[in-house]
Length: 421
Image (cartoon, rainbow, N blue to C red; front, top):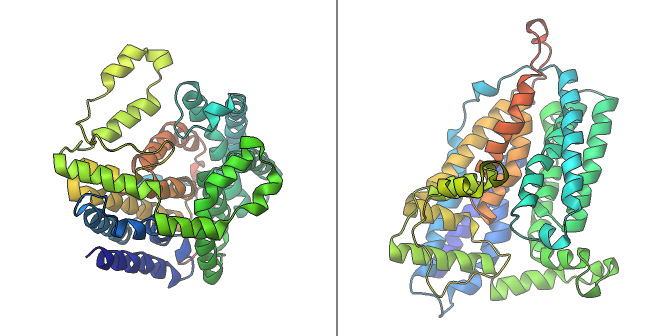
């Protein structure tokens, strides 16, 4: 039974990949990227769990079945999200957009510098708290400025846009290289390739993209080794990068499993046994944690906004520090098997964003670029990741873009038509 479910899961992931390979530009769509994430991150951790006698009975089958539902949900939601988001069909004055990008880049750069001056222990933590949260909130504007500049640069030549893109790119590369942030790396690569696709209709060759996906899945399990070298742990030097056994690390995960899916199995089993669901309270509490500043409203007020979560953990569940539980775990913990609807909603919103972006509207293009990496982290980490991203965009990016809307007389020429899919 367990291996049959694994084969169905494999076929579902391959199906999403094939859906993107069938047409030019399909590699930029969420189903293809989600299928690659499931195939490269989730699936390799599961074979060793299929025959693990130490897991509760039926626990693996339950998670495998629910993961299949989540994979299919990514395709279903995308197929349903065919209508453009008319609320984002804005024609913008691109000169104003570039100036906005410069302003955001400088502001974000200041807080990025402040963030980099904090102790390494704080920066290397898997979950930021306190002052790093406040700095990171404003430092995200660096990415907004960078991707606004990149999108504008692909539409027309501009020295200011090129300068802003270079400034933001250098700082972001520092974060990628020194801290080994996979999300930022994926976001940067997608930003450049998507900007070229949206503005000029030039797509990465599908065969090249498929090879890249397979190599990324192979290298994904060596991130820990890279971060240890980058952080200089135990006196390691950059020259030791060549010693990382990428193939060996992948085979080790394939043979022994990884902590993330084991966490998911144990968490989902505990929730199912206790029948203890949070019905979305997890999302509210995370929003309060991320967006209500205790420095301004006070700790007591912030604490009063949290809603008590039901007990969803068993005593024998102790996830390793730094590991995640995957988005499947929090989706199941919220709505039982109906939690797959979270992935339907994420894919549906991304589908509508993408269709709007393909019509040439800059706000939708930038928001899709900013959303795609968090939407993939919704698979590997938790589904709140993309929701928090959208809330931050609503608070910090959209008001600025609203002020760059083109005067009525310019609106016919301020939008560049997107490529034909």
